Length: 309
Figure 1 (cartoon, one colour):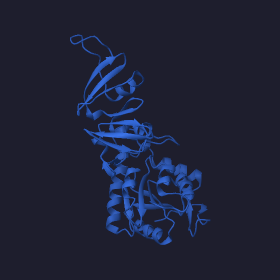
Figure 2: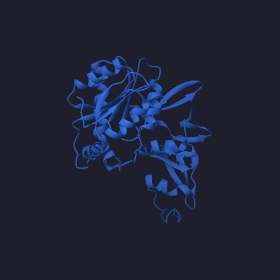
Figure 3: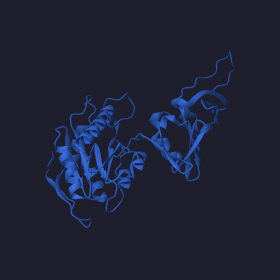
Figure 4: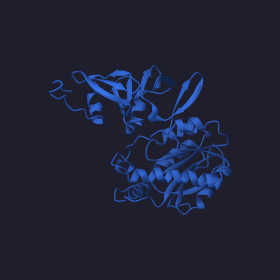
């Protein structure tokens, strides 16, 4: 089902054949967005909004037909290139973006980052082959379609997406899309962290990672006694993994709080954290508040000492 509004946004252009669809004005889109995401809506979502970004007309129409067979999906926008997709996403604020891996003006991965899929928007990558599947999950996509996609496969992906969306709406009090202000973004939890070891790529469950250490333009992921290399930064990973309990304990170290066996006061405002792997990591005073926010360490009792954190 395609919603039609009063203002028109054509996507025909220099990037090849496109389509013309009706989209909301910025004012109407914003009103719809906040009505849709109102905190008063505490129950499961009735309809899900999709934006389809695909430069091949046949593939785009195929995805539209898969959506239109379901009453719970609304295709609120289409685009044939990344630039138009960013514009449309800002207007209609989709819940899910179906994005072709290779677009005429940018990659689908660049589009996901530019359009803010780290917010409540979910990204599903679309391609003619499975070559980029690992990278897609690494970039935060929740699924990957190899075209042509079957109705059954499509429905499975939509079911997972709906579960993720409804979970954000009726979550356990953590930051959700209902609490965001206009222009604010919330981190998107990656399904995998892909690390390299001995010229092989390993999709790692983030929860299995004990800690992450900065290493120039890379980071080292440490899982038990095993190390994996990944091109990323501590700063970005600290935001992405915050909801999983990862704590930045010093400039170059990000620690999974679930891997901490015990903590010792090392000095004024600093701690020594011993992990399940036996590794002992030391924090700096600058990150004391960050540690206490996740692990509420009390003051030492008089029986064992009088050191106060």
